[in-house]
Image (cartoon, rainbow, N blue to C red; front, side, top):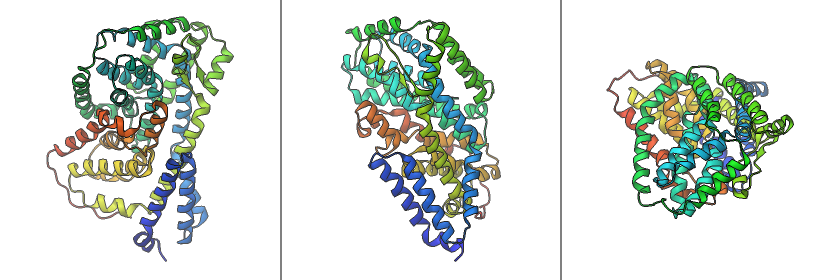
Length: 460
C-alpha cells in the first residue's frame, strides 16, 4: 500500500491521535514532552507500517533537530540571562523606576506600558507575567482594580515578547523556520504592530480611566523600599538591556549579543550587587531568588536558570521533530497543499497563512508547531509569488504566536492560570493585544492590491 493511499484514508486518524496525546497531557497536567514523544512514536510506527524504513524515519527526526540546533543553545542562554538580569539588578531597576511614575496615573494603561517594555528585554511572555506581572497584580489589588482586567492588560504587554523581542525563543524559532533575519522581520512587523499597539493603548486608557490610583500608594512605597534595600539601583543598569536590544537591531547575531549581555550581567552582579562569583554561576545554572525585606517581592524576583530550560528545550526539539516527520514524510502535505494550491493572490496567501498557523496553535496546545509547519510549508509559495519571507514571519507571529494565552487548554494559559490563580476565560476578553493583532494582520492582507497569479499545482 503506497504512501499516497495512506494519505487519503488515514491522515485524519494520525492527526486526531496527535491531538489526543498532546491534549491528554494538558488535561492531566503532564509534561507536553510525553505527548510529543508519544506522537513521534505513533507517527513513526504508522509510517513504517506503510513501507517507510526505520532509517528513513530516524533521518527525518535527525534533520529536523539539526536544523534548529542553534535555537536550543539560545533557549538555554535565555534561561541564564533572566537569572543574571535579576541578580544584576536590571529587572529590579525596571520595576523601581516603573513604579515611581505610577502615582496618579491610569494604572491599567501604565501596567500595559511597563509590561510591554519589560517583555522586550526579558524575551519571555510567561517569564514577564511571573515577575513584573505578579508585582503589578499585587499593587493593583490595593487600588481596587479587578484582577482579571489587570491580568488581561499584563498579558497583552507580556506577549509582545514572543512577537518582537530579539531574545525570545519563539521569535527566534520563527526566524529559523522562515529563514529570515531579525532586522528585516522587525521592519515588516511594524506594519501591523504599530496600529495594534495604538489600539491596545487606547483600549486600556478607556477601561483604566474608571480606576483611580492617586491615593493608597503604600504598596508602591513598600515595593520600592524593599528593592532599594536589596539591590544597588541606578538608571545606568538599564544600559545592559538597551545594549542588547540595540545590538540585535543593528544585525549582530543573537547568540553573540545575548552572550555578551550575559557576561556583562555577571560582572555587574559581582561588582555592583556584591555577589560572589560562585553565587552568580549557581543562579545561572539553578536559578535565582532575591532576598529582600519583602517576602512578596522575593516570590516575584525569581527565575529557574538553565536547569528550568532543559525541559523547554526537550519539548521544542520533540515538537520540531514531529513537524519534520509530518512534513518530510508527506503526511501533512496533502492538507496544506490543498489550501496552498487554491491561492491566487497575495491576499489569500497571507490570510491562509494566518489561519493555518492559528489552527495548528489551537489544536496542538502550543505555539511551536503553529510556527514551524507554516514557516516551512508556505515558504515555497511566498517565493513563487515574490512575497518576502519577512511577511511570512510577521503573519505567523501576528496569529499563531500571540493567540496562545486566549485558549484555556493552551500550555501558556495553563501556566498563567497556575501563576495568577485566574482562568483564561476571565482575562481573555481584556487581553486586547492578543486578539486585535490577528485581526489587524488579516486586514493588512486583505487591503493589498488585487494581484492574481495562476493556480499552482499541488506539490509532492
